[in-house]
Length: 323
Image (cartoon, rainbow, N blue to C red; front, side, top):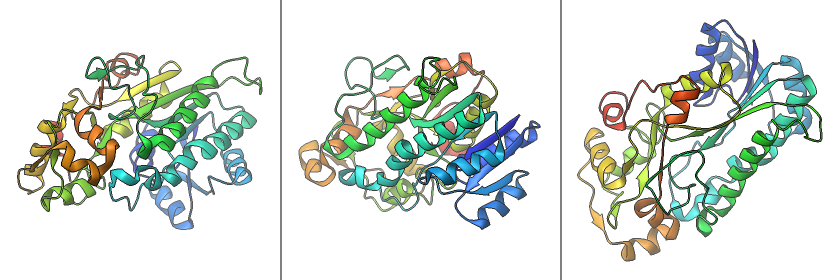
């Protein structure tokens, strides 16, 4: 197949491109700079310079590739500090890519007659409703209001997911049906990501600056970055349209995973901080991340995509695959 990956040189793109090339596909990847084209060529793909926020640039890039499948992996996550009080500010560009960028890519995919559209979303914890069970599947509702610090980010995620899944409806105004798949990735760990020895979370834990807040009962779901690549390749090649959680087998509360990760990166056991003390420092959203967010189940992805994470749990992955 001819496959176009928007964000071919990003954290997910550089794991997915080699897998698709090795499977015999003709792969094109977008990049913002000429140097990215050279990197894609070394992976066996063809690079195309594209401005994802310029509709004509996106249209031209996708037309050049003439893909059967378009994969949306556009984010802007480099340089993030993990400041939970400024969540929307730190995700501002990514939110534009999830709204404007998604719309541009869907329009371009329809123009060239692509049959499948695979898009990155998020399912590592904070987006699900914070009532009921501590582990949610794809049928569980998203939260109505995540807190003032993350409202724009949730709106952008909702926009992307609705646009992509609605594209499967044959009654869409364009008249062109796309098989729309949304991949709700868990929290990334592994080389080059926040939860690694050199990443933001690892650095904070080594410095003793990331405490367990309240009871640390908020549940997070993780996924190794290599497993993100293999899941994305699986969604390119198969699976019915819809939403899939791409996470490992063991959602875990903060009070379990954070001390374990601190040990693996050479940090001290995190201090404990009451929620009322932490609230002015990390905001209501930050307190929720530590105490009430829900994790995700990967049962559907394993069943319908035929995907199994190579790092079954964060315990194994933090110990041997963190980078």
